[in-house]
Image (cartoon, rainbow, N blue to C red; front, side, top):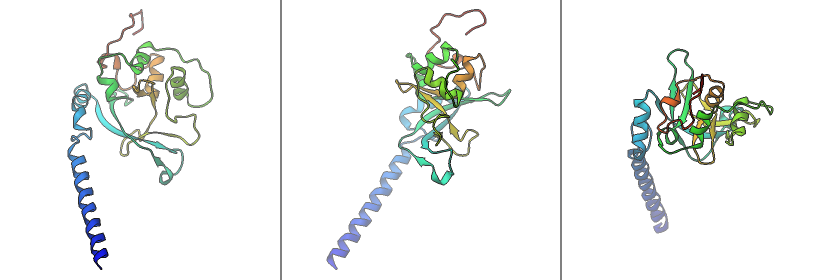
Length: 202
């Protein structure tokens, strides 16, 4: 009897502690879902016409939704949508806000031509060509990417570079051919274009 009471007491204590920790975690985030410590990045995204999204990595998105495997971690993105054609581009809040060079920003600015090699999703292949990783992209049959429900792009293919800078794979791919999706990031990224301008180019 004494053991049963103690077990119940311990269980109740753990439940209260768990509720408290959950509430603490909730108060440590802003209204846009970003941790309070990254508020300047989220504010910059919004001030430049973007929308803040918190996405989670998921494996197996080519299968039934109940079989999707939610992986650890999350990533804050800024989504820009073109008013003229509805196209979108996503860039991680870190990549958007840093004033230092990042591989994702340099890849966007460089507009390196796709070599056309490989079979599968061209945006994923292009990401790999530049030295990035598309997490799962269009090469892995199981599929996967950065997920946020109740959005136009539920599963986002994002090119992640070794310095952890991240940009929308399709936006990067289209930009290599001079096509702007969502918004021209060269006018928004805090790190400016280091490459000299050429006729008809960036």
